[in-house]
Amino acid sequence: MRNSAPDQDICIIGAGPVGLYLAGLLGSMDFTVTVLEQKTSIDHHSKSLGIHPVSLELFDDIGIADRFTEAGQPIKKGHAFIDHKKMGTISFESCPKPFNYILALPQYRTEEILEDWCRTFDNITIQRGASLASIEQLDDSVNVGYKIDGKTEVKRAKYLVGCDGKDSKVRNLARIKIEGEAYPDTYIMGDYSDNTDFGPDAAVYLHRDGLIESFPLPDSRRRWVVKTDSYIRNPDRNLLDNLVSNRLRHDLSGQNNSMISSFGVQHQQAETLNKGRVLLAGDSAHVVSPIGGQGMNLGWITASNLSESLSAARKNQGHAGPILTSFSKVSLSIAKTVARRAELNMWLGRKRSFPLFRNLIARMIVNTPLQRKMARMFTMRGL
Image (cartoon, rainbow, N blue to C red; front, side):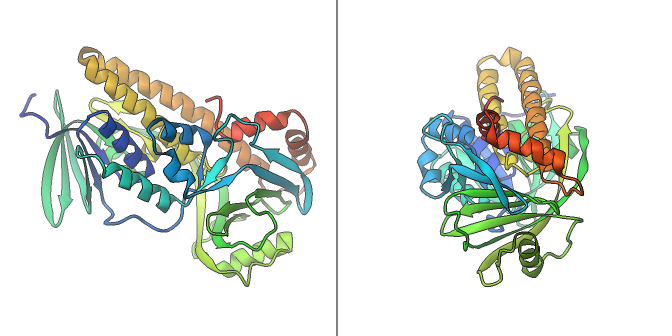
């Protein structure tokens, strides 16, 4: 079935970090792009934090890396502890320069930077308060129905990309199956004014009662992530303060707190990232454990691959199907590797009655030549 010419080349559902990055990439390639986002403004609740070197290199390729590095906090070292005793340090400084660090930047600032970048393109439109309602695939386009300001509107695009999160409506409407499971691991996290001696360094405690991670943030703040025995439905700072105090004898009670939340973790992966003219990226495509901070960066890698594939499909329209199928296979393979790495991070941080074997492995990682290899793995090299 054919209809009138599409309104634009690409319609993206979701203005999170992956949807905005993809929109900017496609806009820089002279695609016309519309981004539809249900939220009316950027959510300032801090979520993802770490921007890895591979992502900074992607940003550098398009001339926006300095916008992130000027706003973020570089982390070049991570100190590892067993209970209270320091066992060593993993340094990222031996990794390839100039981005031989992980950049800490709250997700809302990342989204602000990406949205400001997108708005410099005349061929990118971002519509907030727009909720996806329907998808109709045609031979040469997709009709995208959405509700905005109490009205139902339809846009026709050559391709539709779902970047609308792990509960993706795009994926559901396209009837793309997703497989995976929830892990038993649960955590509580909070952002505080920094009263440690770590400065710009991170710290990871493999405590017998469960993992504690401590990451520096911009503006002399620090994020604490603590493994819990079960999911905390109504988290409060007193609980987090007490967990840190009991396990580490470190007092957070007098520090300013700007965020508390709790979360569980899942591993999910769509069976395919392309179905006709519907494509997936970010958490719509694959969900990995946030322990290790690689999920958002995986989304950017997928988005970069997708932009190149869509550019190739535009040049070779007769081979668009195989090009996009190849994109899906390669991206899902990368996602499986990232998921395995995230599982290792969770395994190391689990509560143990007899942690001797785990501690032996951790010491080998930190105090042998494996340290350099692990630094590369933690910074998402070799995918």
